[in-house]
Length: 141
Image 1 (tube, rainbow, N blue to C red):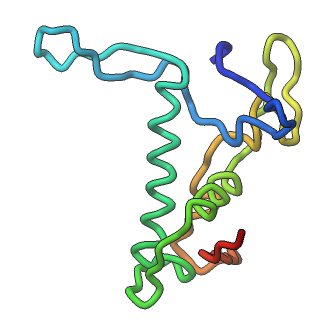
Image 2 (image 1 turned 90 degrees about the vertical axis):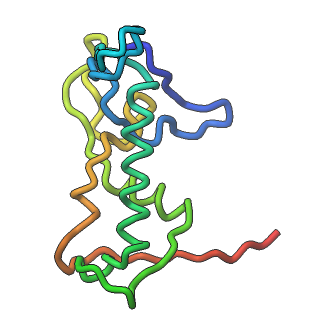
């Protein structure tokens, strides 16, 4: 949506990290009539659930042991760190084409679209692939 925040952050980091659809999203509406009404909405409140669901699917992919073969294997089950889940979302991102306010979108990570739109089929495969994952829980101060 044109009203969405964009970067950079005060300390110079690129934001947003990734994008998800957030315009003209059909959502549940609590109109009080108990009739399961819907309404079209836009904004972060519509994009955030899709981003969260995408992170959940990435987590499920590892927890159920689909990595690295693409087939469920109890021997390959692992609990991914938050850093790995974010990395998978960023790695899945596809840059958008077109323009915003009459200015063409850059075809590189930018403060308008981050690394692009989340597209999980770029990283969650159902066949063996070249994805190589390193995930560590070591913490040092």
